[in-house]
Length: 248
Image 1 (cartoon, one colour):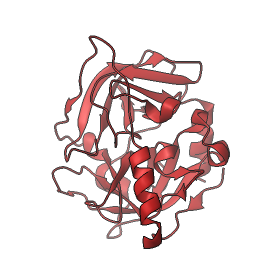
Image 2 (cartoon, rainbow, N blue to C red; image 1 turned 90 degrees about the vertical axis):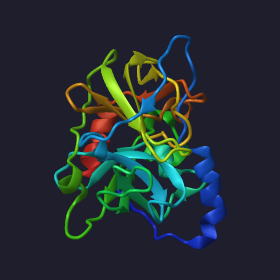
Image 3 (tube, rainbow, N blue to C red; image 1 turned 60 degrees about the horizontal axis):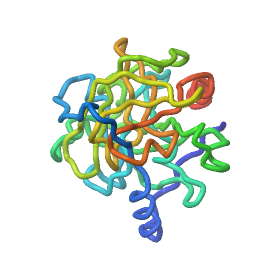
Image 4 (cartoon, rainbow, N blue to C red; image 1 turned 90 degrees about the horizontal axis):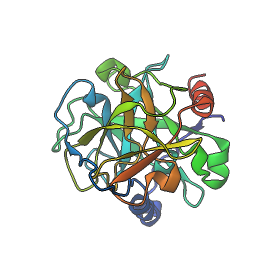
């Protein structure tokens, strides 16, 4: 599970990158009576969530990511399919912009330096391991967690949790959010039902009432095939082990 540094961006891969961006970042299918996400009002906690894009904050969008607490204060969590697939490899030239809103970058843009995924994801895009930790470099001598704070990682908390899920649809310059309850999809996957989670919202953190991140949109169907039902792998020992690898 060793971290692998992200390769420098190369313009010769533009077509492949565009194809990947069209394929990643979805969330998923509707249920009658389910709520619909609304525009997320700005808050310090939501400013820990931001866009993953190519080269600049205004570049092509990949997904959503968020800052998680780490010893070096430089770590994000997102879905693995947002940053690497077996067909294309690592997505190059990624930057993270926390608190992005209507073209504004209140905390700057942070370059991705390394990506940590489970080898079972790297080998075969196994949806049971669709989570990634992303290391970003400092900006003006500060780490990203010093700028916006970070949420603790929560593992082993089970199903039926009240969470808020905030993410960035590719077609919007403002994030959306929904307050929902998690449900069991399988022994190792979970879901929530709320409309509006379209392309770009993969990697959106599921933040429990105690402030811990207990999931990210991804996993089954790479997060889902319709905008009303979204999935995550269950944050259990798999995620705890990957976090240890990313922080050592």
